[in-house]
Structure formats: C-alpha cells, structure tokens
Image (cartoon, rainbow, N blue to C red):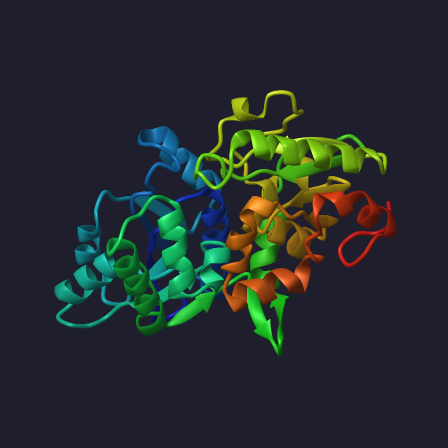
Length: 340
C-alpha cells in the first residue's frame, strides 16, 4: 500500500455475519493507525446477512471503525476490482476469494493483489476435511462439498500474504491477539443482565437434522435445573439462524447483535453451550465464566473437530461435562469458572 500518506485501497469479501465485520474493523483500525492518508474500502455483496439497499449498507457501516479517513462504498460484483490500482489489497473473510483474485490478476496483466485473510470463526482453524464436513452438515452434496473445501483450503494456503487473526499459536497452545480483541470490547452494546443470570448459547442443531427439537428442549431443561441448583436463572440466547419460537417455555434474550458484543451475555454470571465460536470468544476475549455441556447426540460432531480447533477450544474453555454432572462441576469450580 505504498507511501503512508497515499490513499490505500482495500476490497472486503466474504462477509456473512455481523461478527465478520468486527474482525474486519480491527484490521481497518490497524491500517488507519499506521497510515496518514485516506483508506478506500470497497465492500462486495454480503449475502443474506444484512439484506439489500440503504438499510443494509447502514448496518455494515455501523460495525466498521469510525474515522473520517475511511471511505466506504458498496459494489455488486467482483468486476469492480478492474478499476482499482495495482496496489489494492483484498481483505477476505475465512479464505481468499478466488473469483475476485482472478479478476484482479486478469485486469492487472498478471500482477496478483496482496491478500489479508481475517477470521470467519472456529472454521478458520480447521482443515479442508473439517470444512467439507461443515458443508455437508449444511446440506451440501458430493462431489461439490469436497471440491469446494479443497479449493478454499488451497486458496488459503497459496494466495494468502497475511493472516489477521484473533488467535495465534503460542508454543503448544494459543494466545489472543489484543489488536483484534480490543475491537470486540470496543463494540459492546446494551445493558448487563440482572445478577445471577446464566446464558445458554443455543445452536440450530434441530434445523440441521442433528437431533430433534424435543431432545434439545429436554437437554436445555436439564441445564436449567442444574444452574438453578447453584442459584442462577437460565435464559437462552438463540443463534441468529434460529426461530425464537422453537424455545417455547424458556426465557430468552435475543437480538441482531452477536453474543460477543452483547453486554447481556458478556456480563452474565455464567455462559454455557457446546463448542462454538461465540462461547470461545466470550471466554477468551471477555473472560466471561464459561461451561461446555455435552449433548450425546452431537458426540460425533465434537469428535470430528480438527486438532487445531480442539486445542484452541481447550486453551480457553474448561472441559465439556455431561449435563448430569453440571451442577456438581459448577459447585466445585474449575478452569474458567469459580465455585458457585
């Protein structure tokens, strides 16, 4: 991106959630802090995450760093990169966008762009095989899921110049990169919950066909009983893909804000759930007391985690426990939770 006083051009690709914009914003803040000139950001389509039109564009802008030097525009296709200078950089969620990269190379006479890859979530720390399994869970068929997973993994390996990640290897474990973590803390919204609140982060397992809604409700009822035995009141935080109506009979707290940015979750006395990006970030970034609870029907899913994903989760979260042992575990305490 040449001289620090020159205009810097970046193209943001792959945004599919609000939390992706927080990762992107941390990188933009870094660029703005290390340069004096304007930063022009071109945002490529964000899928169904924000909808269309001015309201969607406003929602995206709200989650980006506020700086008068940041100039944001929105584009409908990868062809927009044809009008950018050769010094432009791609800022890609999860993995490089091969389509955008190819368009850039074609229009700049074989010169590749610089590529920075930011986290998409826990999936960023898996392998092509864990990615393929994720595509299959979401309804993808074969051979498309395999081809897609291999293409993404290959692009991440060969086209990436820089990884900008919330988590970095530290010997055999992991550490938090404070440059990214600060952005999550800076973006907190809402009010804290009443004292004694425990929040369970649900996931759309029933919608994905991995267990029945009845079985999931029974699991959640058992969790509610366990946390009540240590003086906590349970509320559920549905995943953004879920319908709140699926959890009739439970107290809910929900909204469009990612759980890691919601003070009602961040400041809870305890946050619970299965292996997820949100639970990991809450424990690692905000130091929210956390508990992992096993769901027997999801044992194969947990076993299919990649070694990087497993060690990352284990670095910041306590071991998962069966719901039958949850009350005792909470009373005794352990890594990530004090005795309750």
